[in-house]
Structures are given as structure tokens and as C-alpha cells.
Amino acid sequence: MNSRIILEKKQLDITLDRLCFELIERLGDFENIALIGMQPRGIYLSRRIKEKLIKILGKQPFDYGELDISFYRDDFRRGNDQIIPSELKIDFTIHDKNIVLIDDVLYTGRSIRSALDALTDFGRPAKVELLVLVNRKYSRDLPIQPDYVGIKVDTRANDKVKVEWKENGKKDLVTIITNQS
Amino acid sequence: MKKFSQRHLLGIKDITASDIQLVFETADNFKSIINRPIKKVPSLRDVTIANVFFENSTRTRISFELAQKRLSADIVNFAASSSSVSKGETLIDTVNNILAMKVDMVVMRHPAPGACQFLAKHVKAQIINAGDGTHEHPTQALLDAYSIREKLGSVGGKKVVIVGDITHSRVALSNIICLQKLGAEVMVCGPTTLIPKHIGTLGVKVEHNLMKALEWCDVANMLRIQLERQDIKYFPSLREYSMLYGLDKARLDSLSKEIVVMHPGPINRGVEITSDVADSKHSIILDQVENGVATRMAIMFLLAGQG
Image 1 (cartoon, rainbow over the protein chains, first blue to last red):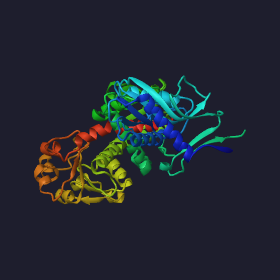
Image 2 (image 1 turned 90 degrees about the vertical axis):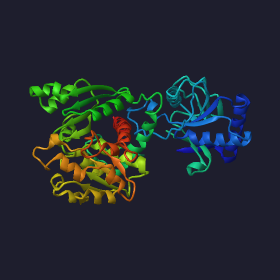
Image 3 (image 1 turned 60 degrees about the horizontal axis):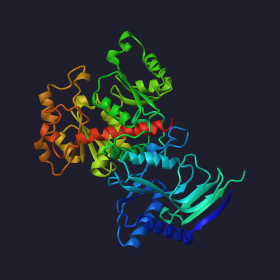
Image 4 (image 1 turned 90 degrees about the horizontal axis):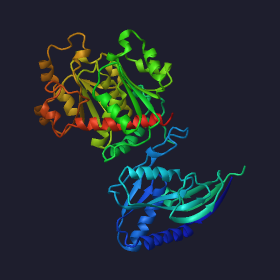
């Protein structure tokens, strides 16, 4: 087993800054925008981005929520571990809103599909965009692509991308773990 | 990794405190789902559930049925009164016939204690006990404890008195075990004839004076007098029972503190509880009904997730 660091604290911070400025560049004054982090692991990223945006803009002109997709996953009863739901916090209406979904790693795209289903049960958003910290290229099972990307990486199917946050009791770190076979 | 420890839900006695906490945490999610405009999730869309009721039930059956529909499961309902059971078919045959139609889960209510254990041994489907005779009613105990947790913040350390017909009550037994597993203190209160002789072996306090019991507790769970299960007279008259063990406004107001009042339903207004108490702010009776759907969704989601 080999592990390779792809983002450390300082680079991660720069990447998050860039993502925030990209959001500001494209979304302007954030009117009618909602940022939604995906449970369980995307929320550390979405909370960081929310905090950074508030710092840069001096206010919070957007709605912020956290979405749990446990009940919409397509691998329920497919021989995996028990699915344990996480907390869901969306206390605004998403009807006709422009949503930015936020997750840490985009791999097969199946979680994003579940999230789109889950979102539709809250209403009909005007538009949904996707922001991810790590985009694993050439690994999609579904036709889903991100709009905002922190870093692109080439990985093989049995590699793992691990994202750790200091809020999670770890150091800020993104690594690729390679299983040599 | 958190995991529900059992394949079936036969009784509270078989599950652990962490299973119960897991049900509560999952039920929190479902409670928010059933309070939003679209009250449905697609989780159990490939699961078929049979509701097999060998005894009458309105609220438990409706609660299970709603929970199943909100999880997108396919369901078949079966009531013994209109079935071949009345033609002499055995329990295993009846259920195997239903299972031959590719059913994944069976929710069963049966008048014989242990009927669900027996079934779980002999058929492949996952079994949920919706009440077996005077034995257990685990989903009721879970929704009761969940309602206490919701109202008081936690169950551990709380004092709960269960008042009424303890002998004939499966709700009482499941509640006692569940509350104790969560660290609550439990007392039973009622006339001597309706309290089992050796109930003390469960580690509960026994009190025959309602006022003393109410002064002691944080929560009073008033059980229904189940005249249909009583083969002989256990007390002289309903009027006398209600004078000694009925909860009315005057008794509630004379207490030195506020208590929470619960009732598993259906209520005999004027017998174990008066209307002004049942409809007062102390009562969480309708919260119990709402929480029933959320906890049952949680249980079926957790069990189906193992399949």
C-alpha cells in the first residue's frame, strides 16, 4: 500500500480560496443561490467554503444547507454495510433556486445522482451546479461532471482518495492511497 | 461502524441499548421527512412487506402501513378474520403461502405469546413483532421511549410510572425493558390483581397508591383497561377503578411538579384518563402517534438495509 499526498494544508487553503473566487466570479451577488453540502463527508468542505465566502463578502447573501442522501442511494440492500443516515438541514425552500451542490470527491457520480433525486423531493430547483474538491477523472458510471473543481487526479479503480479535515480531528490533508496488486 | 444487531425485531429483550439509540437517530431523520411536503423516500422500493394481523388493530396497522408507504415499499395486508385461518390452516402454512409470493418482510400481530419467535425460526423473511399476546410490543415501546426523549431531552435518569393493567399488557413489558435499557427508573402502579406477583424480579418498583406514584415520577404512562383480555373480574367496577387509578385534572394539579402524560391508545376517556387531561398540554398522546410512524420507518429501514 502506497500513499501519495496531493494537497497539504497550505495548498488546500489556496485551492479553497480559488474555488470561492470562482463562485463569486460566476454567481455575482449570490442572489437566489443556495450552497448545499453533502453528508457525511462533503459538509466539512461546504462549511469551509461558506465561512470563507462570508469573510470575503462581509455577509452571507446565500442560503446554506446540508443534504443527506441515505434514503436515495442505489446501493441499499446490495450487500454493503448498513447505511446510517446523517442529519439533514435544509430550512429554506429550494423551489426556483440556483443550487451549488458541494462534495469532497467525485468518483462514480452515483452519490450525485442520489443527491439530485433527494433535492427534487424538496422542490424544483432552477439550476443545479456541482462543486468538488477532488475530481477523479475517467471513473464515472453516470454522465455527471463537475462545474467547479479543486484538483483533478488520475486514479485507478482500486485506489482510494482520502480527504481529511482538522474539524474531523485530523490534519487538513488529501492523499491518494494506491493498492499495489 | 454502527449496525442494528438483529435480523428481526421480535422483542425489546433481544436488542441492545445501542440498537435503540440507532433507531432513535434514524427516526429523527424520518420525522423531518414526514413533516415536509413530499413525505416519501424511495429506499424500500424493491421490498415487499406483508402485514399479517391475527388480532384486531387499527392504529398499529395504519401506522405500519403509512410507514411502509412512505418508504416506498410494496405491501399486502392480511387480516385473520377474513382468511383461511378460520378454515383451519396453520400459522406456518399461512405465512409460507404469503412468502411464496416473494415477500421480504412480515409484520405480525398474533394472540399467542412467542408466535413471532416461532415464525422467525421457520420462515426466511424478516419478522417484526407488532404485538404477540400479553408478551411484547416492541415498536410501541420504542415510540414511547422516543417520545419521552423528544419531550424531556433524554430517557436516562428519568422516572417513569406505568399505571393500569400490567398483567395483560404487552406494552408494559416492552416498555419496562426498553426504558431500563436506556437507564430510566420504572415503577408500575395498579390494583394488586392487575400486577403480576413476581414483577419485582424485573427490577421495577411497585406502588398501589396512584398519588404516591405520580409524586415520584417524571412521566406517567396510563394503560388502557383491556376488558377483552380479562377472563375474570379483576376489580369490582370500572367506576371504582377510575376513582382509584384514573388520572384527572384535580390529581394532576395537586402535584408539586409538572409531569408528562402518555397513553398508548385507544383511550377509554373517563376510565384511566379524563378528557381534560388527555387533551391538556401535559399530554403527548398525539406526539406518540406521529412518532409511531417515524420510529417504524426507522426500524424497517434498518432491518431492510441488512437484506
